Length: 204
Image (tube, rainbow, N blue to C red; front, side):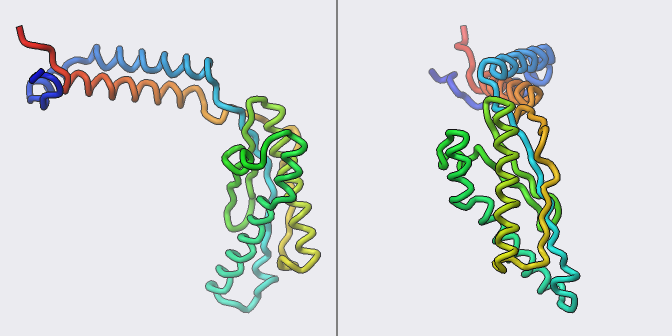
């Protein structure tokens, strides 16, 4: 058992670098494995809806410094993010799509937003139509509730929201086939290299 997991020698590294057929075969086999996994256990579909958020800095704080602008943006953005994940919206989506709220908040829904401009509402689901409907409903509910909070004075009156993408949303796989192929090739080659370098056959 002394040969097992013995440290690689310089000769081992040279042989590994010269084994170009080994690298090509490993890449092909790994890509095939990744492709098989993609079709056997495919990733969910992902749809994206967009709400444009305009904080209107010049009107809200015309005389203030950049630092005050920064705090204004941070404060109002935090309020809007809390609205996106509030219980009322999550419960509504959960009831309509028969998905537990815990699942919605644990990755099925994802929010990506800058300080100002487009806020993207992502939804994942095994079915493309469901993913599109879920993303659309979430974005529409967010915009409606946020506008209600603006009217109530809980969010600055100069904040404007507009749903810009919520109908006929395209749905694509959350991870493309190329990602599975690349991951399969990388994983297979890495494993094969470790075996090649550290697991040595018994000397005759």
